[in-house]
Length: 209
Length: 319
Ligand code: FES
Image (tube, rainbow over all chains, first blue to last red; front, side, top):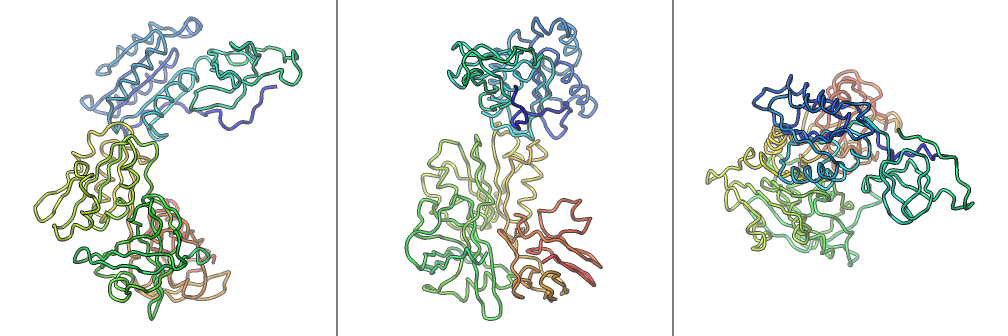
């Protein structure tokens, strides 16, 4: 009963280095480390050492991801890339706050790379939009958990890390998670699942792992 | 486009520099002219004795004042008539036809800062945009380069309110705009707009690119008279007529003179509206537009007749 075929679900492509930029900001979460390391490797091949201006803001893998990826390894791998400034965070909120400060002082010619779960990408994009970064300045690759941020169209609350087709909102309504994505809210729309026949819910299934 | 023309009357003409005349137009029906946003241009249709000219001019008047439109016309050295017609032939009280305003050079609404760069007559679209910018909160600056004081048109329009936002560069005083300095250190979300001579536009585009500016933040507009060239013949397949294109008229103008309408907006090779399919070609297309991709040029299947020409034994167009 998922409503699909909706165009607003963003499409991501594998990250690559954009040599037309002068400064590079890389944001990663969890297994998002791997695509970022690939970008850094490409950068080192293309740009002379002295011309590299790159900053990495990285959030360590969460408990769920820790089983799949390996935190310390990613961090070590970043540290092994010289001339790149690295900052490591334990939660997304502080990483984003740091990104906001960084963007405020950044110059035209900056390219943004984002790798991680879609919800992470969405939140980073919200900030990027505030700074009027356009499609030709941003690259994003989805990896890791497919968990969604869900916006309740009835009470406007956001439920994070949703992995199931239906979810109970803070307002006690059961929401059906749609494919309709809002870039402004960085969330998928959740609509009351049993509005027409109260109490009649589709079977709960785990669909966004 | 003819369905959309508006008849206007010239209500004032002023010589503002040795080369630039300033015209004020009002609708002959009275009342307001169509609304427009800063950066828009109109096409002015001028019925000369021998031929019709259709030239694009930026609206420089305030988008908040629709009882009249204002344009400025620079006398071109090798004008094929349009600017000479407006400079030497028309007088106050004459009527002209204009097409609805179209904006191909609008301000970016999400921008966090605007940098406007004008060379000479290229100041015109910015005069209208400044009216919008003054009311907003987004920072902006205007860099205006001219030959000398006597060539600096519309300084009084910039007014004292703008004094801190405007930098003037007078060539004869050796004051040149340093594009590197200007574009190297701008905050994220800045947009640059340039209108002026071709050389200036190219330098801005190249400099911006070298500092990593993406294309979506660099905007330019240029109104070129269509280049002159050798005469050639073209056959219009659907209309089943042959048209002879003379050296000093564009392909589009000659097609129009033969009574065939082609859609257009800019008449400057930018908007893409006059895109025409080439059905047969024995020879070479001389592309002068900024619209077709390099690939489309080489395949020879398309032409923008507002500016491009041909050197061909046979050319058949899908018109
Ligand atoms: S009319 Fe705009 S490209 Fe020809």
